[in-house]
Image (cartoon, rainbow over all chains, first blue to last red; front, side, top):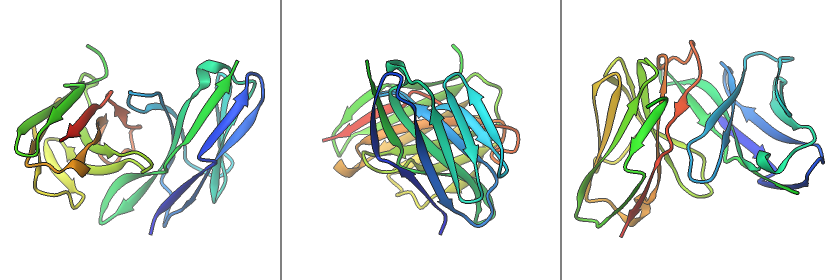
Length: 112
Length: 115
């Protein structure tokens, strides 16, 4: 069964304190890994897509990396506005159709 | 309007009511999706439409009935819901349902409460 596990469930950081969020997956044939940011009361906002092991993408203070078993979202010198829930999803083929399988997310709180 | 819009943003209904959720995308995409997001659970895919044709029904109870009149509009008709159906219902769109041409873009969601 295709599974996506995110850790930790929640993370509290001080402003400027760098850290990483983890997304591990067990799928039969990865066809893309997606990171989203979700603010309270809003829909997920797309951040990155990664397709192959070794690939990296950056956006402001965020950097996503991918290995054959997991992805990391590195947050460098975070600011309070980075507080949100970060969702990881993998694209898989199930029953002949393609779909996204999501993890439960990591709730990040950055204190000033 | 830009992106993906959803109305209403909040909905409270009794178990005997009939209501509909509306989603509209302004991105020129061909695929649209309904997801359910409950507390402490991952997003659950409910339905997929590609070029107005339903391509996925993820074992969703019949009290949820989707409708896609064109590639820009998606509805979710609700009737005789249960309290456990209370959740955030998210609509998304992508270039096509294979996702080969890009990621999914989400609307802000409808917060549904069933009394």
